[in-house]
Image (tube, rainbow, N blue to C red; front, side, top):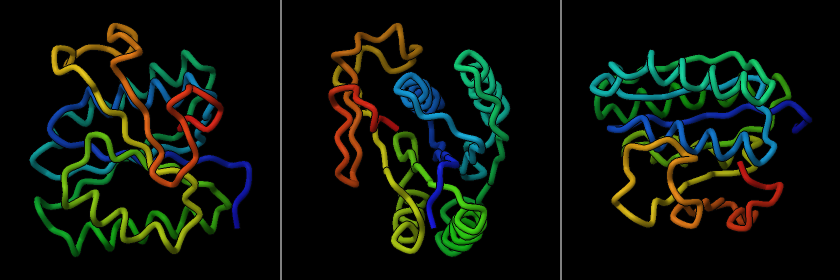
Length: 167
């Protein structure tokens, strides 16, 4: 079911920095996605263009050029979110991708819908990057002291040490 192909699914909420910074961290730890999906709700979709451009620039800096796709869900629509995650995860699974899920920036409706779906798909990590000091909310990853950022994989593969399982 799983292969060497890597997909990355990120959830965009109120702020784009957590999503972009987590992706930066994941790339810096050696994860090289072939395809990236950014899910968001309509109320946050106005920042999608900037987020996609940031993901492209970061990917290019790390020598990868993933397809970047976006999915916009109606606000607080759990049923549509559930359906869209199932469709995307099914397609990725059938194509032989191992899926990483980033919930750092996601809002509850999307996080819940994504987490309900992962049990049936080849998801090898659910990452969240905590910012330990609220003085750095809107800065690029490398402008925030690394000891103030803690990455966690909720599927149990450690990442706090910056090891190979980071993303």
